[in-house]
Length: 292
Ligand SMILES: Nc1ncnc2c1ncn2[C@@H]1O[C@H](COP(=O)(O)OP(=O)(O)OP(=O)(O)O)[C@@H](O)[C@H]1O
Image (cartoon, rainbow, N blue to C red; front, side):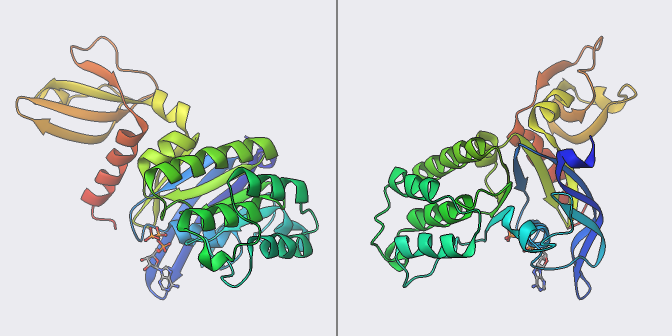
């Protein structure tokens, strides 16, 4: 894939706070036109990566390019990236309409029609103060301000964390709709694998400051399989089959493996793996390896 097809390219990206590593030697190629789910436990490095991508902090080592340039290279580059920080911050004493007026003043590419349409669509009252909005309404307002500048890349740090399941579902459907409408790319971090499974078509699993696995969801699902076999039978796997996670259940054992195609000609049961199981397998492996 050529670098012009990528919204984000990282090579050896490392960020340390004092001696504490937040990101270690990360290589990432995130393609355009995707909704990218960034998952990992608390302290995995998700916010660190998103903050670096927005130019809010700088790497300790390695390189990072966003839309072909260093992050926040200049005002024109900033205008191409929309960012919604964790906790979807808004100005409590400003009304919904004030937020839109401010967005229009600050962003040359502001689309007032898109902003007003979204506000009406999600049922926000333009006269209401942002401090009086519910968590879900605040998230919708912050998303509206970010998308109305028509960014090529939308970066969202746990945008739906505070929402109840129904509101989260609505928010994520709305988000994927607006990303498709803009022809944009979104990168969103989440703890909730179910949310990522529903809304993302590209996955990055971070744990212990390192990228554990990354790729297009369809491709990852095609390359991962669950093998079920009598205990001990999985000791000798064919070449090209990498074990991600192996578990015993009584007389049987299960393994989630990575292989270009399902292992054929073996007595083992070969089953497909869902995205949640795939991500959990890498997270469990990372936790077991103690590299947190
Ligand atoms: N400003 C900071 N100063 C010192 N350490 C920091 C700072 N920001 C993050 N860290 C550390 O870097 C590591 C990664 O933190 P980060 O916030 O990127 O994780 P995260 O995956 O976003 O976590 P969460 O899901 O809890 O938001 C953690 O060990 C954290 O304590």
